[in-house]
Length: 168
Image 1 (cartoon, rainbow, N blue to C red):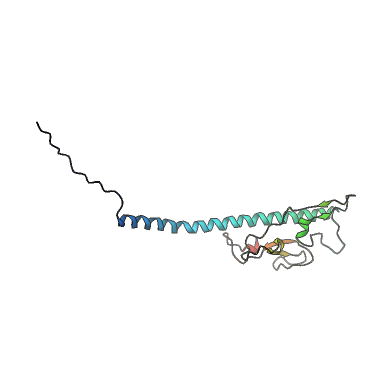
Image 2 (cartoon, one colour):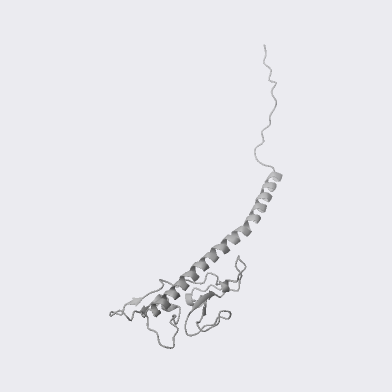
């Protein structure tokens, strides 16, 4: 008896056709273009978080300086507000006038840069990246003066929440 092979002939092709490759490339391109806006939003959100943290650190240090002045630890003249004369005083420190050894009181380890500064210059001091508001200036029109009451971002861009960074 003879065996007969009645199976189907199966042809095996290895690889992809040009059309299949083009379809896959097109799908990947569509997915990549959909992901790009999310990446930009994530980067912007990260920068905004850096801005919030930097503003909180500087403002807390300014408040601590004012409290030290009110407690009589920092020298204050009669015509001064009690706020630091410049941002660098928070890092450089000021003498403790109640300590007989004249120790130095520090309020910040380093002054953070404004993360929203678009004109990034390494030589630009961190204090110059911030807008400064004097105690004497009105809140709706901040201006520099003899002291630093508050800081704000000098960026003219608007945050994800719709509020300009300069108003944070």
